[in-house]
Amino acid sequence: MTIVSPFFIFPPISWWAQVINAETIIFDKDEHFQKMTARNRYDISGANNRIKLSIPLTKGREQRIVMSDVIIYNEERWQVQHWRTLVSVYKRSPFFDHYEDSLKTLFETPFTHLTAFNLASVIWVKEQLKLDFNIQQTENYIREYPKEIIDLRHAKNSFPATIKYYQVFEDRIGFQPDLSILDLMFSEGPVSVNKLRGK
Image (cartoon, rainbow, N blue to C red):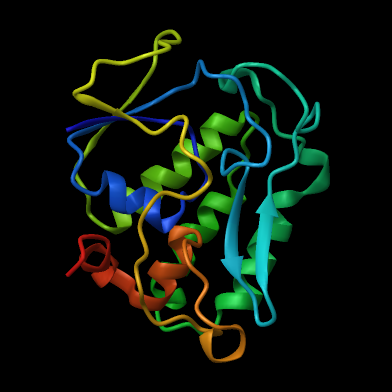
């Protein structure tokens, strides 16, 4: 199975449920950036509500350029802010310590292009969960793919899937569906793969 997808940051759980059995994922670096999507933000669960972590962009979110040209605005030190938030929220979760060192390295590595960080986030998850799909990037923009290729580029922020699992703050704010894959991994660890596969 081949899937075409936007470049997402630590994609939501339902995205992973869609691609878990894929042989190849083609990331579209030639599509136009779309604001208010997981292309430059991801959701986690805080003690009182959902938290949206966004990567600032040099020309703001209103720009109409292809994804491969979107530049991160690093003057805001967003990596430091994101990492501090993740530590604050998840330090006491069951598996944060399991992933902390390798994930922290990702937030200490400088990135200039949004697609580079997004891809690095997907590769990190792929390696941690020991998934074996191939990753490719587009050579040019293709409006429509053959029917045998699943195209996720025009889906909304979440995909049709709900996976239940233990959440750190569920007793306070209720179960929060379709958060970033990080939430599932910090709660369930290596067995997150089984959750994604409906086991």
